[in-house]
Structures are given as structure tokens and as C-alpha cells.
Length: 321
Image 1 (cartoon, helix red, strand yellow):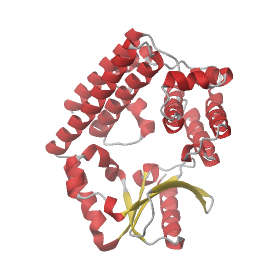
Image 2 (image 1 turned 90 degrees about the vertical axis):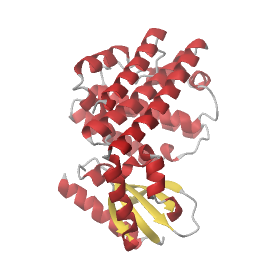
Image 3 (image 1 turned 180 degrees about the vertical axis):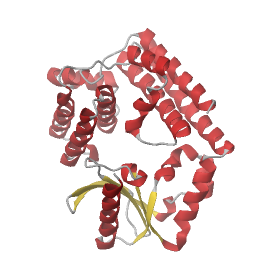
Image 4 (image 1 turned 120 degrees about the horizontal axis):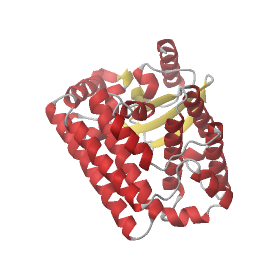
């Protein structure tokens, strides 16, 4: 993994050198930033520039590798005030590998951030931030139940649980890896068994069909005239790589959960204000059936409330770390 990470870091540096953008700061995150890249990994590259470019995200093929590129203005480079005010939003700095840094300004911010994340004040602030997010999503879930919008209630309660889970993963295991969330929470045996019982996931017979379902959804949305970064062909490849890694590791539940998240993100990107119920009803019946296989099912009220309770339980675990 280390060799692959180093190779992808070299590719990121070469890409910056050959680009026509005046890059002031740059870092690589994700598995490459953590030094955990494998043959399925891409490069998550963020660059900061002073040029008059709009903040943007794009996918680039460079030297045979996929680069998920984010371009930001240097005004958006995290500083001490920004990090102290909202550490949960800047936790990515914990796993960032800086590859360009004029005058070491970025390195100093990163060092301050990692120290702050590990401090009592930093942890307390992150717990407060995530607790507010979980509370808000739980309120949404309960409101949707009152409106008999069970799909929306399910997604809100799943979102509350996921956010609480990521906090637990960060504070207890010092990781931002989405792929590690379920494996680490699996160590909380009682909690994990309860989550499996109430979650919207059921292991299907042919798990290799899961990334194909995402491809069908992207294809349909493109035909409807939607346009966003998540609908490009490269994302089919990224999705297939992620799925193959999980299939190789026999992580069926993790595969369903991550692909559910991918599909839900596409809904947020293309819904144009429609409720999920309206959006789902507008899809062809074949696609509705496909999505039900990866967790798009309306949970009954009891299970939605149990997911909300499990979210609070994860917050409690985080507070005790």
C-alpha cells in the first residue's frame, strides 16, 4: 500500500507541475493521504490558487490514474480561526498530505489543527457540532414520520446515525475512512447487531449487481438532462472499483451502505427541491425496484425511531472516548 500511495503522490505532484494553474498550496487526501492506497484507489487532490477561478470539482484522467480534483481560492485555505470555530468541517486536515506549500503557511495551519483536534477543547467542539447535526436530522426524521413520509424519515435517521458514526470513528480510531466506519462499529457488538436489525439493508443474492444499479441510475439521470460531477462516466469506474474492493473483502453490508450513500447523494444533486417520495415516484418501476435492493425502502416508524436512538448512543460512546 505504501508503494502505491507514493506512486499516486508522485502523479499528483507531476499533475500540478504540468498544469497551467498557479498553484499556491495543494494536498492529497483519502487513502493516498493516509498512505493506504491500493490498486483500486484514485487521487483526491485539492489545490488552492490566487487566480480568478471559481471553486470547482472535476474528474481528470492523468497518466492512467483518476484524479478527483477540487480547485479553491487561497482565501479558503483553513486558518486557525476557521478551524477553531468549526473543527468538524476541517477534520480532513488530519489525513492531508501537503504536496505544495509556499512559505510553509499550510503546514503550520495543519500542525495547529491536528494539535487542536487532539485537545479537550477541540474534541468538545466537534462533539457539540455533530450533536447539533444529529439533533437536526432526528427532528427531520420525526417530522417526516408525522407527515407519513417514511422514505424521507428513513434517510434522515440514517443520516443522523452516519454522522454520529463518523464522529465515533474519528475520535476513537483517528480515521476519516468511509470504508472503515462499519468495520469499526462492528466492534460495538450489541450496537451493531441492533443497527443491522433496523437498517434498510438486506444482503441480496448477487452483490456484483450493486454497482450496476448505480450505473443504471446515472444513465437514467443523464437521459433526463441532469448534469453534475457524480453523473460522469468516471464515477462509474470509481463506483466499480470501490465495489470490487469490498466484494474481495466479503464486506456485503458495507458495500450496500456505501452504494446507498452514493445513490442518495445523486438524489440531493438532481432532485431540484422534490421530496424523496416525489422523486422516487417519478423513476421507472424497474429503477425503483433496483434501488430497493440497496436500501431504498421505507422503514416503519419503530425502526426509524430506533435508528435515532442508536445515533444518540454513538454520540454517548464518542463523549466517553
